[in-house]
Image 1 (cartoon, rainbow, N blue to C red):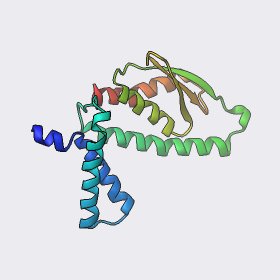
Image 2: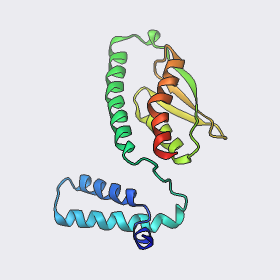
Image 3: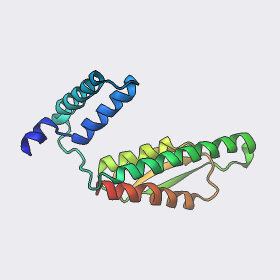
Length: 165
C-alpha cells in the first residue's frame, strides 16, 4: 500500500487529470490514454511536496452527486438569468449582498463552495472572512436573501460537508 501511495500520491487527481486529457484530445486511442496516465501520474507526484495536506474525500461517491446537482443548478440558473435579463426591466431587479455563514472547516471544501457559487450564473462569491466563517455573495436578483442563503447551505455546503468532513 505504501508503494502505491508513493507512485500515486493523489489517486483521485491522477484519474481526473487522465480524464481531462482524454477530453482535451477529443479522441480515444491507446496512445492518448497512456499519455493521459503518464500526465496523471507525474504531475501529482511533482506537486505532492507542495501539497502535503491534500484533502481526503470521506465519501468519494458523493462527488458524482454533487457534480450533478451543480450542473443542474448551472443550467437552471442560466435559464433564470436569461429570463431575468430579457423579460424584466432593470429597476424591477433586486441585486444585493448576502453573508452566507460557513460551517465547513476544510479549506479545500470552502474553496469548492466559493467556486461553485461563482460558477452559478447570477451569483458571485466576493469575499471570505479572515476566520473562514462567512462568504460574502452578490446576487443579481435576490428578493428573499435569507432563502437564497439557506439554499446555498442546503444544496452545496451540506453535500461538501459529507464529502470532505
